[in-house]
Length: 365
Image (cartoon, rainbow, N blue to C red; front, side, top):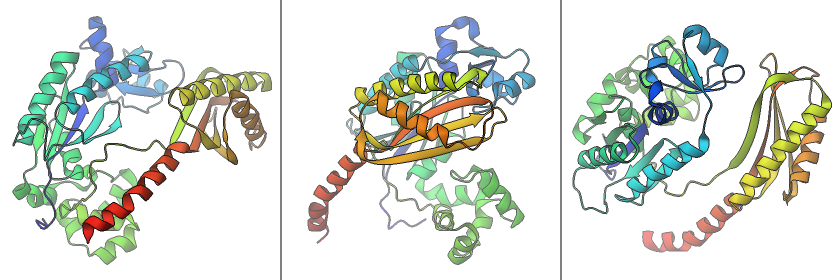
């Protein structure tokens, strides 16, 4: 490992089966039972309890497949307002220790505790305290990974799940990564893992034998990432203010849509919901995207970008209708979605970066 790089103390906190655990906590009759958060008849599993995972039920799995794998699976409708409420409590606990908190979703975040508000030396102790406080205040368990960078902390948090933690010490990083199966490297999906297997790359030590040139040739831009992370090099900092790049609303329908009037009604409803969400957060955007998933699961998306920001539900509806007319098929529709991107949040980020540049140049002189 390159010790010329600054050694930080990074914690990755990941709630255990978050949505499903909230449902089991709020309704004790569900404890110890296989449950799936999501629509039973249509749609996909948003989250599965550990009891359901034993049967191979996973998030993003079609509900029908989940029921086939676990016939006694209990479906529970999602309650996102409740999940957000608990997520807010959890983040407040994080901020007791550091302001350098980078949320990845409602149920996981990175924390940089190199310098922390409590002056605690041990990141391992901080992680234990945080997990204990989360349990005391919410009744839910969390797992944590602790190491010198975000990549290693993320990998570590998965090792002793559920309700555990793992520290990868600076002097153990190289040995740990050399023995780590490549499919466990964060950012290596099934397709990439299979390609690595075909090249005789099964563990970190196999990956380490490949030159930077070889990895870039085989995996494109990701090759440089693999070359670095297997050596414990990952310089991405914990970013406390993640810039939102898009806002989306979508619906999976209990019965397929065939009728044009039904589609218009659904687009109007989606447009209203999108407008409310944007207004609530003072967000505007210039690119509207329509997403259509057909009965056979084929997917179609089409976007329109305007010079001016979209500002009203009527704009979303009228533009959504125009995009609908561009669809390639007249097939039964299973899902409709509208999303807005090219947001004014990105412009705020640009202004922020421009303001920072002179100071950074001065500091580096």
